Length: 310
Image 1 (cartoon, rainbow, N blue to C red):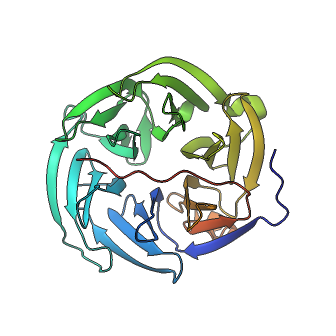
Image 2 (cartoon, rainbow, N blue to C red):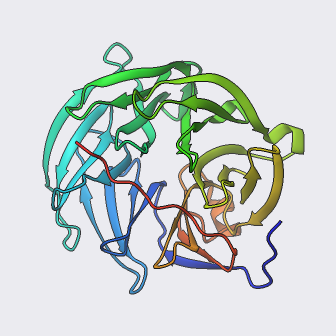
């Protein structure tokens, strides 16, 4: 286990209602993330703590990422739409140019996209869930990957809350979280086709008596998984090979939603959180709820956020 004597948790920006989908832009040194229910896509400069945002009218915004080779072009999910977005992240724009590439789950009116990420081949992946008036229906969502033209391919069905996608550094394994299962699972991954197979569990929060549910996830250069725990006030460092919990980082907010490595050396762990659904009493106890955090001194180095090839 790595030792670090000076871990610090910095509040960078906020509060936001429900921060999600963090993505580090190595070229611009910007952290992108979404404010899901507010339908906002945010660009944050951690050096100055200034941020701008844009608005996606199609619905809740789970994640958006830059498109490789196209200036100020992003692909993301809003409601049940896969969209292409034109936006200069240096400026605030409440009415950006949005093009719908495809729509999923048309027969399920309460579904929306949640988490998503780009795979090692440049394909954009995102999963859905069913939510009405804050209540979630089991097994109504799915996980999709998208072809370069935006055509959806259903990878998994009967998903409840699609979360926590990442791929191993050798491009052989896909890691995934369906939050209410309390599990992190692995699949064999074929980079050429995008197909997955051979599901197995690599970690179960219940076996370690960890409160909360697993949410967003990223991976470091050592192949360790970093998992945000919503309603658990913590982040877990997990070795998927040994299936062991290596480290727990306690956070000053209960609803930790997602994580990504960034910074010039990829040694800062950026963390999103939520205040959505918390009571006035809860917020008094955790004034940092909804903030974006930067964790320094972990001694871990992460992998680059990948841009989509569309």
